[in-house]
Every structure is written in structure tokens, then in C-alpha cells.
Image (tube, rainbow, N blue to C red; front, side, top):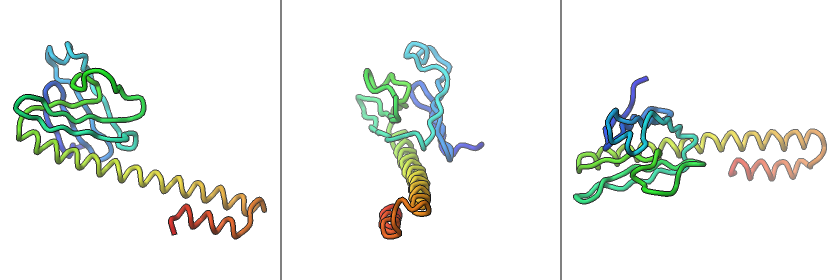
Amino acid sequence: MQSIFCVEGKDTILEVFDEYCTLSSKKNVWSGVRGKLGATELRYSQLTAVQFKESSFWMQGYILFEYPGCPNDGNIYLRENSFTFEGKQKNIECKKIVEYIRKRIAETHSYTSSFSAADELKKYKTLLDEGAITQEEYDKKKKELLNI
């Protein structure tokens, strides 16, 4: 599968695909010292947020991926769920990547929630068919679930 974006950071490589992105460690001494070895696949459906900080003359920039159970303590630049970079050109490139990833997260989550609404509607239809709720109660819940 062809990546949409691929950018080389301080000690990792970030590749962005249609359904997920990967953080792969560079094969160098710093990756080993910082404990960033191997590759991590991050599916948009599992991500809850993406933080972005531009690099400056004094500080590295970063993209931080958040998901349930991700590390959230210690140095942000050393976490397995962060991508660090330097330079003004990388700021521009990484900003585009973050916008794309945020868009994909939103699309994935709205797609998932529509399935949840359909599942809930199916449950209420079963309750209606069994006589546990009235047609009026079913119609009210249907409007609520479908945002009508």
C-alpha cells in the first residue's frame, strides 16, 4: 500500500496511510537510547486526539498521538506515541499531516457512531415487535438516534 505522507523525524519515520499511520524507529543509536525501537501502527478508529507543537529555534516540534491506554507521563519527546522533528520546512509538512489525520479520525468516529445508532435502532425495533414499548416510544427514540 502506498503511503499518502512520509516524513523523517528526529529518531522516527512517520508514514500516513488511508486507514492508519505508522511510527517506525530509525536504525540508529539514539533510537535505542531513547527506547524507540520497532514500529507502531496507529489506526484512526482507535485514536482519540492528536496534539501538534511546531518546532522553534530552541525546541523540537512534535506530533503526539492519543488513544486509550497510551503513555501520558514523562518526557513527551521520548514517548512511544510521539513523533519529534526539527526545522521550519518540517513544521509546514507536519501541520498538513496533522490536519489530514484529524480529518480521518473525525470521519472514522462519525462512521462508527452511525453504526452504533443503527444498532440501537435495531434493539428498539425488537422491543417494539415484542410489545415491550409502544409505537410512539419507538418513533421518539428513532428521531433521537437519527437526529431528526
